[in-house]
Amino acid sequence: MSIKFSNISISFLLIALLSFNLSRAQETISLSEAISTSLKNNFDIKIQELSKEVAQRNNSWGQAGRFPSINFSLAQNNSLRDVNNPAAFLQGVTTSRNISPSVSLNWILFDGFRVNISKERLENIQIETEGNAEIVVQNTLQAVILGYYQVLLEKDRLGVFKQVLDLSRDRYNYLKLKREIGSAVTADVLIEKESYLADSASFLTQEVNLKNAIRNLNFLLTNEEIDKEYIFSDSLNQNFKVYQFSDLADKMYSSNANLKKEYITQKILDNDVRLAKADIYPRLSIDAFYSYTSDRLNLERANISVENPIISAQTSNAGINFTLSFTLFNGGRIKRAIKNTIAQHQIGSVKVDQMKLQLTRDLKFAYDLYTTRVKLNGIAKEREDASKVNLTIFNERFKTGVVNSFDFRDVQMRYLQSALARLQATYDLIEADVSILRLTGGIVDYN
Image (cartoon, rainbow, N blue to C red; front, top):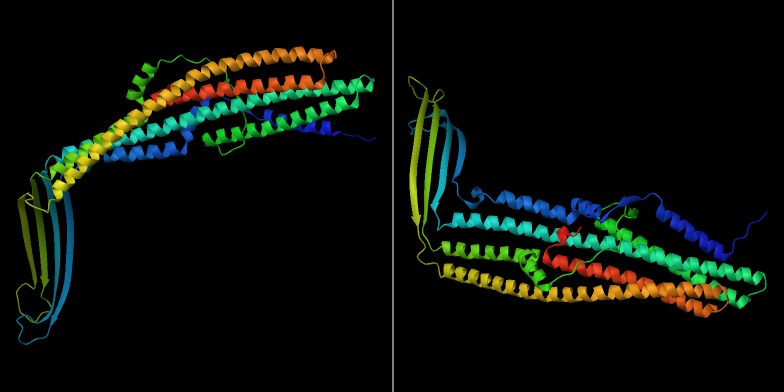
């Protein structure tokens, strides 16, 4: 017994096998779960968390210079001396040992309020680092949200291509049956075969697009199983909000992560100006020390007669010193440093104004784009509904012979285009919505 497979059967078998591979060994994942996984595993977020820890440790009074520095040292010196000189008073071999521990303290009592300014600067650096982390988190959220919906878009596109493919296959099989009973010509069958093969190719291509979107999502989730497949519990269709531009602008000025970070950077530049001005003031410091020295001299092998050949001596030394220093002239370096930090502060102010204007422009773009895409999404939905009804009508007319294959194929392609356009319009609307939320700082509450 021999079994023969036509090209059409082989194509359909390949499609069935690929569809089966897409559906097996899958786990359900929602958008909130995808976001949670990404926030936990994302490499950039982990780096920012470590940077936050460093900034938090540095934000201390000790790092700012509030407390004194205390040093302890311990020295031991050993020596052997062999003298063979008739003119020398002490001849022979002598050994000595010296132990000298010491403690010193240095404390800057006043340095032009530099300690307080430095502590405030460290606090601002910590806040700036947290702001950097917030920016990374929001960028990650935006990427994951759009990546998740990109998968849904490609998945729904695949459904449309499958629907068109099923219709082409049914029509092709219908005409083959009609040819067998003599009511259809071979030319019509070949036309439907060509359409069926073209739709099969489009379906296979779309499966590749879906797989690539899944791989991109797995990358965003930091999943080493880059081809891992899921059942997606969320839908591309959702209810969209109605925004007022004035409300969005107010929220953007108060909550935009990039703008908040720029404000903190401006505070750090203000700290730099105050630190530069601190060099104008005098500096008062205190130094205290205490040392103890124990000496031991051994004269047992020396050519001298003494009652006790072991001589020991102890010495203590302590002191407190105050130092007041004031820079009278250093070539104008202090004044230049102050002017330079003031210039940097002014540059920062200009950057803040520039960013506010840029964000206002971007928000207007995003707002207009969103409102336009809301309308386009509605138009695309109505167009799809109309083309779907028209496809149903023409399908019945085709079966009754009222319309030919060319007319039906044209209606079928119009339906395919309208369905794909509606899906793209929905995704574009989601993308515009996410852009608005990113600009206004509301993306953290998206889900």
